[in-house]
Length: 265
Image 1 (spheres, helix red, strand yellow):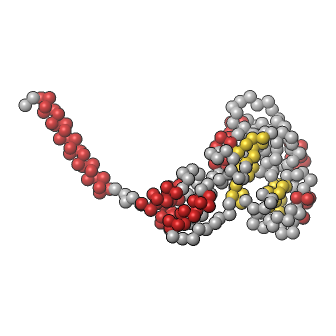
Image 2 (tube, one colour):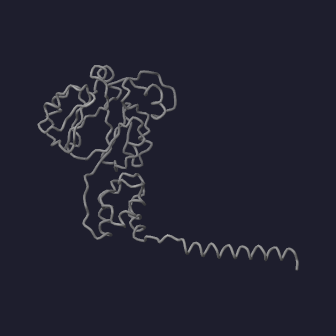
Image 3 (cartoon, helix red, strand yellow):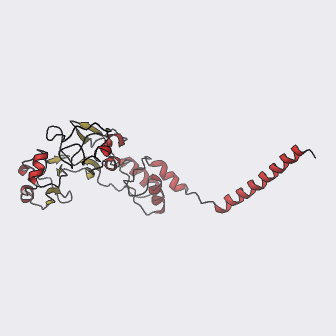
């Protein structure tokens, strides 16, 4: 027999055998496809942000299919996604408290200044490696916009050297919070409440020298709150949104102006 034909037949036979082995192995070792999970996945926005507490949209869809997750955990998807998931699962839609990302800092250029002339990479994550950042307040926003670059919904703007987030556009995916090297951005419930927009843990005098709008831990807001919603730890006031009733008695006592009305009607 012609050697060329023999070689072709040999290779073809080997390929046929290998193909059969792979086909049999694929049939024996295949993982059953969860059609319900795939249908639920199609309803999710595909942001894979992890705000639901799962590894991504696929993980959340699998948990929904197995009945181990509630349908109202997808904040980027909003109320429409929750209703669609509930309809597919045959359950009542559960409305969770809507959240938005908040920048806990008021250190714009009108309140603070840089401590150095920074000429490096225009990135918060890069600048923070140099003596804790460019600003006099080592806890404050540097305004290079890593959070803005991470946001897929154009909810973040940089104004006067300070990041700000539009609650109407924010989908609470948390990607901006992950991008902030100082941890200044956190998710907060969208409800009428008082919020301390400062993250400084320095003593009052040091904070005041670094930023005219920083919390100095004076305790005036704590004494003014009738519900015990405000506390001061590490020279910084914080408000518990679960206890805040929106009376804003604390705000009238804040001389620094870092206590504000959030989401006020």
